[in-house]
Length: 145
View: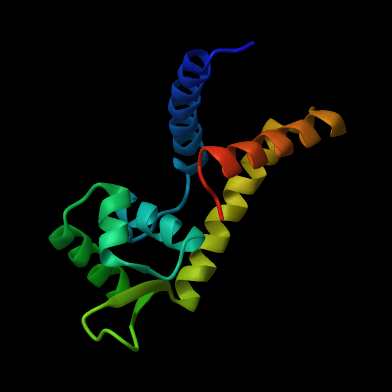
């Protein structure tokens, strides 16, 4: 039987490896006029939107004033847009604009090619096991919806 402490140590190792993998997959992305932080915000928006400024601030570990400034810059570049809450006028949601969706589509296509290169020699059975492992992690650790 595997101890929960062993699984915890494995998880820490995988978190570090995930950060390295993310860096490797995004380091050669053409950023043009956006900073790495702005890219991270766009990436977060692309997988979880619409979201509030406070959710972005909390997830990315940046202050609310800095989050507001970065969202303003991304909005001025036409990459995201704000929408109001029908019930609470103080609350605003942020989502990618069509240009932002297009930009992230290109980024994800770049990452997809790198990922497919990594698993090109994996058997169908290994790919199925990877998929199953990711499903289990999503359901138990990452709490994917």
